[in-house]
Every structure is written in C-alpha cells, then in structure tokens.
Amino acid sequence: MATPLYKEKEPSIDDISLLEPEATYSYADYLKWTFEERVELIKGKLFRMSPAPRRTHQEVHSRLHVEIGGFLKGKSCHLYSAPFDVRFPENQGDKDNQTFTVVQPDICVVCDPVKLDDAGCKGAPDLVVEILSPATASRDLNEKYHLYEEHGVKEYWVVYPGENVLEIYDLIEGRYVSRGKFVRENAVDSNVLKGLKIELSDVFEEING
Image 1: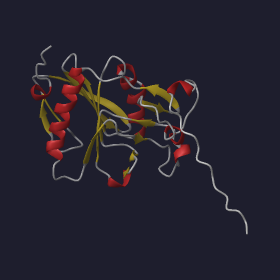
Image 2: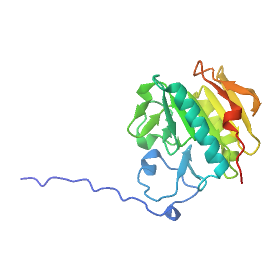
Image 3: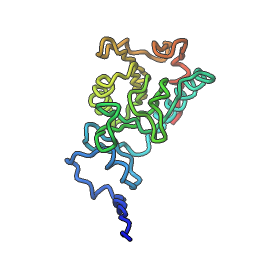
Image 4: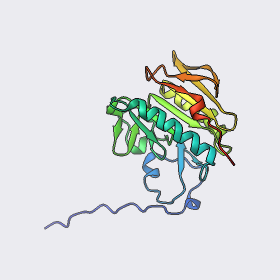
C-alpha cells in the first residue's frame, strides 16, 4: 500500500526582524506572520503601523464610529474598525499568493456582501476613514490615497485630529476630487451613505489634557 503524502505546514514567522524590509511580500506571506506588531502591505512592500494611537485619535475614532454605526443600524451596509484586513487584489479571482496589498483602515463601510469573507474584505469598501497620526500621516495622504483611488473606494475621509479638520474626497470618473475641508462648526454628509449627516462639533469635542 502506498504511503500517503502529507504536505508539511509552512513555518510561521514570530519575529518581525526576520523579514527583509525591501522584499516583496504577498497576502499568503502575511498570513504566516504571528508577531504582535501590526503591519500593512502596499503593492508587496511592508509598512509598520504606528503603536497605540494618541488619545485624541482614539476619541475621534470612537465618536465617528458611533455616529456612522448609529446611522447604519438596520441597514444593509457593514461598519468595521481596525484591525480589519482589507485586501486589494488586482483581479477579484486572485489567490492569496497573487494578492500584494492588505491594509487596515481606521474605519470602513462595506455595502457589497460579496466582498466580505471570514478574513475581512476583498475589494474596495464604499467608504474609508483614516485618522492621521504623526507616524502614518504621510502614508495616508500618499500611498493609501492613491491606493484607494486606484481600486475604486467611492469616498475617502481624512481626519486631522490635531486641527479639528475633516477632508472629504469623492471618486469622480476614477479620480479623487476634494469636496473641501470641514471644521468643528460644520456638518458633513456622505454621497455614498445617503442620509448620513454628522455634526463635527460632536466629533471634535474638547479633550482635556
């Protein structure tokens, strides 16, 4: 009787220092990493995420999540907060080893259930919110801005918590167009989530300390 052949389990990597910073990685590689540090992949390149966000970041994040979540209650769209993996394959049928981008937006809304699986979201969310921090601001305003634009995220909100400003980009004919920068005295709405309106005075409340 022939001896069954068993495929050996590929080893996991539990120390980020074992990775080559300039190497190209796929989502299949990403799934083997068991170290605690959170990372993102953008076009195969490794980006470390910031350590625990500042308190102002957390306060703004919490308030936006509550506002959007309250609006979506009973609706078909789904709201997620980091850590939540969003994969951007070049083609929807690409396998894990053919997918080279996976990011963790601060907040995202997905209205197409076909894009959701046990691993997270495969494809563009309808709305993405990134709250800037000193460690991630450049990436959010450059690499991730172009990534979301390229893959068709319909609406991109960028929050400047230190300045109490929220900027909205709408995807128009494949390119982002800034709708404007809004301050604490303004209210904002969404072209994607019709009927959503948020008073920014409720988001940018004074934070002591």
